[in-house]
Image (cartoon, rainbow, N blue to C red; front, side):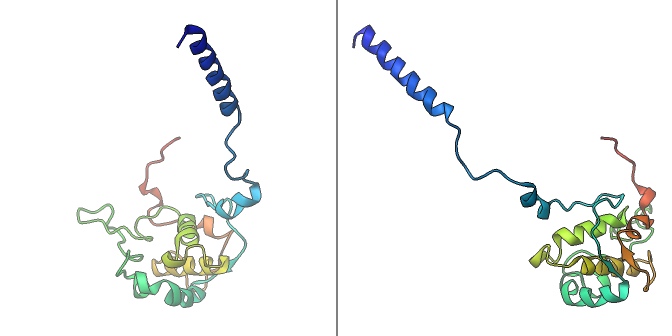
Length: 173
């Protein structure tokens, strides 16, 4: 092949390739704020983003028995999954640490956030906001953080002081 033919072939290939690269792939569609909203449900320690709703430990006991007890045992005792209650004082002791909601978690809002997005395991995000507040209240009551008739809502939940709140060293980001 002569030099001119090679140059012409290379030129043609460059023109075809540049045209192909100039057109962006057309995968999917642009995502909108409405598409993101159902997944943008994070709740921070200060309670920002907590939804409307309310619940008490008494209400939460019923929801817990129906939707949580099979995995977390009666009154949060564990089996087959994590223990949710007890362990007070074990984090700072010489014995083995029992990490539960009451002994380890620093913020009550974290409990709400976790239940809301991940529980029940077989039907994540299926609980109503009232059910999440109620189950959170029940677990916090079992851990001695609140009373049986205390109401949890977006105003009261962030104000709770968890037993291990000061057990963590802040990490500035």
